[in-house]
Image 1 (cartoon, helix red, strand yellow):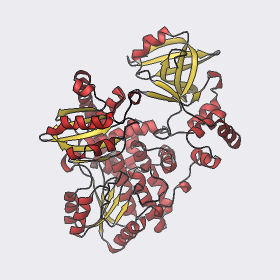
Image 2 (cartoon, rainbow, N blue to C red; image 1 turned 135 degrees about the vertical axis):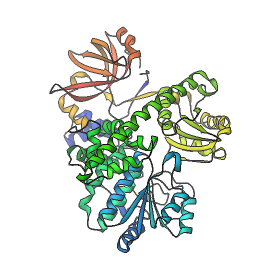
Image 3 (cartoon, rainbow, N blue to C red; image 1 turned 45 degrees about the vertical axis):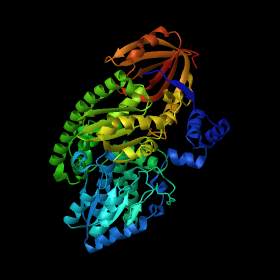
Image 4 (tube, one colour; image 1 turned 60 degrees about the vertical axis):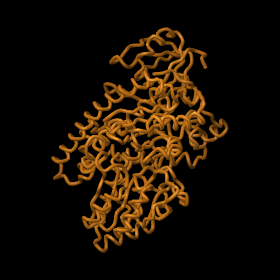
Length: 573
């Protein structure tokens, strides 16, 4: 745990007071809502108690009507349809919900998810040729295709009707397809621009169900869409919040189809109330491991399993996912160690604003995770390249202040292919141009980032003395979940707190302690904070805490637990 710059989140106190009175919530909760742009009581109520009725009309998306018309016509005529997905959790869950919806509507449907090392990324002409040869007449892409201009041209040559659904940033040229459904299209006036790929696929499912008089089917698809939405780290506001919050509730309550139920069992979460942590750090890594290490079809087949007669197959598939995840963890640890060593020992790499590291034969399935870990460690944008012969394949992750996609666009002459988002992107390039690329991307970044942008920061929502932490306040804070991008877990500050028990090391990595302020004692844990033990011990008589708060149950008893985000000396701010 590296000490960070604490900065207070602004709030309109007058609006917060009005909201507290209007909703009957604590002033603390009202402030949190206002800080998240929810000062209007109607908006706040929808946020606290979302409903499927809050989903927008799917036909407000550009090209949704022709997409639905062609798919319903395919069902009526018996045209074979293929769903073309992507190999991450977002892409797999997108594939699963759209294929399942089409099957239930009576379509002749297959799916194709490219394998990372064999097929490459995104919508490719070769895949369309393969599907055409198998008798497919309509191809629907999910979570990919917005930059597939060449693939769209090939589809036309083959006489395939191509429907693209995606959420990635479009290029200047939109593919010439029968329909291109993407809220980020510049000519699309859809009110929610931040859907995950599975969110866009869900809108297509919603439209198909509405036109077919099957809207009652929608909740079952929302459950799977919640997994992809939470895994893709999109802002958990608007429709994403509706999908994530309601989906988690339905996943927790069940009943779930055999594939989904078996996956939950395999990770030890049966009977638990699932939250964003369980999806992001337990379930999603296993689904992702299939696409990273072997074939994403393992995960797709598991999530598609709906008949109880498939229970044995589902268990075998879930065991495969666990095994692939263990293999992923081993590969990842080796590459993280090598990448950190390069950043720490090679000034040409480590002294730069953007870390660009490369290695021969690094497993392409894990370099994205490695890039994320480098960002966490060094608080700089990171690009990790796997060299395979003459070609380098890269995964990029960024910090809030740096637009990674714009950085790649500035280096476009050096790149064979690239795409993605502001915070995460991918690329391929000639291996002999890596050093040149490192210089170009850093020249671009140096002109846009200040030294303070590279210092880790901690957003603190409010001061919260221990005496104000009541059961009602903690329950209200928990009602703001699921937490994630766009809706961060609230972090509070308590000043001049005494350490009355500990700090004690847990598993040589974490710190546990009991803290007292104004006569009240609360227990807390600081994850991965072993190196701060001496600092906490030195300031045990008075220390400032930044923390989040939640209920925890131990031996059947419910109590308040603090998760310590950072420590600092009193009055250090």
